[in-house]
Image 1: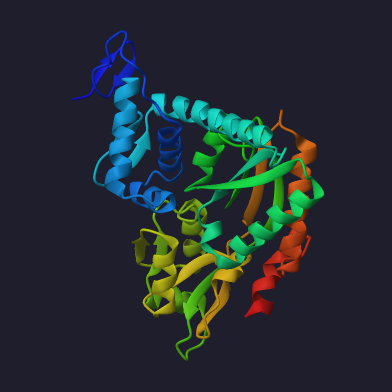
Image 2: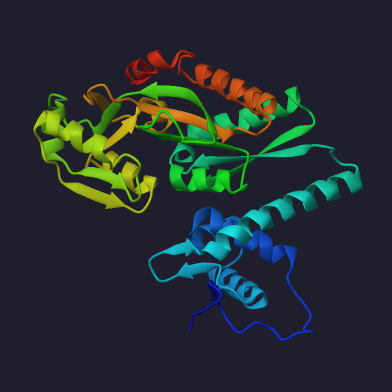
Amino acid sequence: MNCLSAGRERARPIRQMGERERMELRQLRYFVAVSDTLNFRRAAEALFISPSALSQQISELEQELGVLLLRRDKRSVELTQAGINFRRDAMELLRQVSQMVRRTTNQMDAQDVMVTVDMELVESPAMVYLLSDVAHAFHERFPNYQILYATQDSWREQRQSLLSGGGDLILTMGWATSLGAGICTRELAESGLYILYREDGQKPDPVRLLTQYPVMLREQSVRSGAQMVEAFERLDVVPELHFCRDFRGVLLGVFSGMGVALLPAFLQGTFRHPKVRAVPISCGEDRFHMLAGWQEKGSSEIYEGFLEELQAGLGRQGLPADPAQAAESLVGFL
């Protein structure tokens, strides 16, 4: 049973005075992994342990602390306020331990730069390869720094994590052109939306596609907001919506001809299927943006170096350095 005391949520009774603290760094790493994904199964896969063992470790950590870090049921996992605060401190401690070990063993005198990436971006194999190459090129340019990547489901979670000290940079995408007060924002790419569909031998008319096929959406998708509804209204259609648990489910639905998806051009690396085509859909003046953000008090010179490498990588992948030209890249690709 959960109870409240002095404004905090209790997980289990606090240990008695004099009891030995048994918290381990392993438990901190496990908790950070779960807080990154808010999904025990995915976190367990990344840690190469079973979900039940991971759940037990988190429960033991909560018992040691005497507070509830995660609210969880069969459908969702979310951080409590205590969990948000503990995550920030745990990540900082793990970073310090990592740097201490490297300095002590004289393996690498490098500082970590934590980059949190929108989950939908790394669903694209091409984007994963690109981010890996960018991290390598960045380290060659700045030998005293190295890039570490983490993922989160939405830009709101990314922004909250950044402002609470849970990372250095965020890479995200959406309709907004700014990530809000206190965050420096750089636009990396820009495009309109495209309807992704399996070729069916008929004219690729947006109205027909949206009327004939359901629109496949990822749960918590940033593209299920007001701008998408407005795009449908301009075409005078009310499509059927199907929600998938992850982006792979969306692509499987499209590749099998069971539905269509709405995606920006800069996810073109995901579209490699001989029968899949794309047609642009009008969103008026609205554009879709890939954005980078960091706290105003952050190390802008180092962050700018990383973003320069990323911008160059996007250009090599087929996205022009000028974001205004990026909308044409998908047409040439297909």
